[in-house]
Image 1: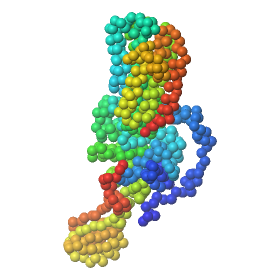
Image 2 (image 1 turned 60 degrees about the horizontal axis):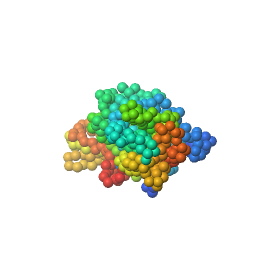
Image 3 (image 1 turned 45 degrees about the vertical axis):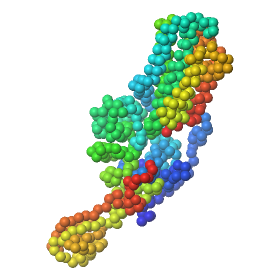
Image 4 (image 1 turned 90 degrees about the vertical axis):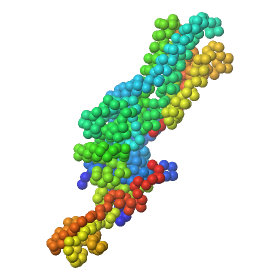
Length: 309
Length: 294
């Protein structure tokens, strides 16, 4: 069994009378990309701030590779890199100067050239921070999180403000960092990002973990299974399909047949029909997404407005 | 469904690890004034010492690239020197000034002004901005404590102050005929204590101000009254007794008194030196008490 890079158990943190994090427990396995997904104000940032030792939990315990983030903060910060939200840099320093400074903070820093190539900042070394676009600032921020060659990287909303191409490039970089054995704790409210990158996702809402599973597992749970619809090339008896273990229900809707079930539903149905001499035409799949999972589990949408950050 | 969504229960070792009593070392660290704790917080073994040099370098670059402080700290006093030099009466010995010329009286006041500009206007702004923009927060996630940036800014501000004062004094002597300070040792002591007192007040402003704009406003609000009591508009020798008494216990009044004595060759009396040391200590403690890293 793999060891845990980050273990959070029964974490609670309140600001005044408002509980930001309420009894959160989760474990991040070494080498995985773990997503914390939820709407603004759900307690995602507070959770990672506790993991980074920036906040002291009211209750519960956290262990990051065996270290207590508050008590062992100094050691923790040599093996954990962080990219935080709303964290600027001095306007009149050049990118190269900032990288040189943060590089000097670590005993075994990363290769700066390689890092900025991967983040598309190679041509920006001589530019002032002030003159960088939002996306470039964000990528510099990620570079600073990785410059100490951390064992665990905490990235809070790392692709917010990036255009789609920069976002995909960043995903590629994060995957390559993970391939080098770095555990990544990713805070996001982008479904696409969680589905694409994360091995497992914790859905957080109002300070609580409402679900914890693989992205596909969460999606499947939301729909309770899959369904497909098609137009058969010839009439057939429903019992041909209802007898299959994968198939739950078969309903007819005009010329369409709708089959709901689980597992390898599509392949099984198409093969079974083919052996009976029936071709399934215009096959459509109803797949559910993480977004559906979120709506189903929390009763609201991820990007709902009016929730204070 | 619910049992399925909950994370799996923790194993027995996770439970047993919780009540693990902290070792004696941390209990020692709980005492409010532990040298070991302070050293560990300010100089953690995990932070490479060379990083401090890098931080100082970047802070010096920033001071150079945002030179408002440099211009006011160096340019304004030299400009005032040139103006004062042009006033003929400024070079006449006056009995009301205790046998000094107005020029003699104003050089210590300009020294105090340089220190005050850098301490109250140049120093707090960037620190507050760093906190406001999350730069100190980002540093809190690295092996280097954010206090190193504060220390680097103090080092840079101190160097700028010393350089400005050297320019001011050397120009006064070579171009405007000021006498060479007669007690250099006492002058250095008076200047260093003045810088300590004023920087402590500047740090206090950085500790309480929430935004860079607020820091500048508080700095300016503190600057003008202090400058008044230094004798900028009305030399201390000409002040009514009650204003003189107040001036003696203000930081810039005490600074001017000590610096003027040292320039005239006397070792300054204990009172202004103690006043300066007192300001340095009290405001440093207040700053330490109220400073927030985020």
